[in-house]
Amino acid sequence: MVVSNKGVLFKAIPTGHPVIGEHFEVVDRTIDIENFKLGENELLLKNAYISLDPYIRERMREPHIESYIPPFHVGKVMVGDGTSVVIKSTHPQYHEGDIVAGFTAFIPIGRG
Image (cartoon, rainbow, N blue to C red; front, side):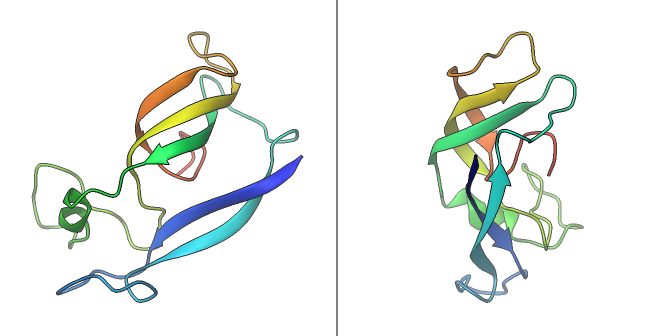
């Protein structure tokens, strides 16, 4: 089954207020869930909620600037605190249908 796999791509480090399309953009890709192969102890998640808190602006900085949280990397999908449903799992503690919470993105855990 091929489904939509949207993500927010970090495109450039802003010097002022971030601008949609210039500093980040929503990208729409697809993923074939049935044929997607997980590595050892990996999860494939479907996000139910993802938070876009003000702290995200702090992560849109040059990598050499130290902070309490790591910076986003240009060209990578942005992450935030979220709640997800496990779609597939090779991890012994997580099973299909489990609800999980934590830093998540619109990519498979461990692949991004």
